[in-house]
Image (cartoon, rainbow, N blue to C red):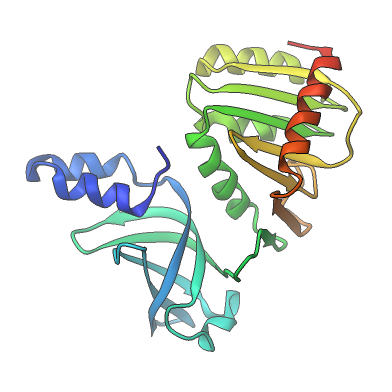
Length: 249
């Protein structure tokens, strides 16, 4: 099940009071990517802003950002949809606090997510949230690297993972085998050169990423597109590529 504010609040409110603190500790430090609604803002010291957001069920989410990182917020009206990336730092009786927060406005019908330079942690949170709940993962990346393995650590032990690529690092297959053994994962890998685009398929959701994962959100900006009209074609083609690819593991 996807980690949502509502799920955390449900566990918090229904747990015996003595167990609440230990149960909430499990969530601290987890990366999140949540779509929320802008509720309020307060100026802090050192040009920082304390932003309050609401979930669909009116649960409070609080975070601190630098004014320079998201100056647009000074003009946004209340109830503007915002996407929050960050890590859970505290879960209280009233609100959930997020640290290392990044905010982005959500526009109607927008299936494109823009990650500027230096936003790699936001990409990790976004993709990591999908990996956490997916039962089947299919990835095509022209240049698979060890960074993908770090991303896949959050996957379930029962998740079936298919990795397609063209230019694998020299010792990458050995690292996959060791990764599977150590983390009890189920990654299989094959080699093909049938696509230039990079695709991430999480069950029925399909995303196209415009750069290899090892470079995404680092010193170059990255765009992630959620596919709709072409989603089924990509799924079918991936299975064709997989069937004709060179088996590595």
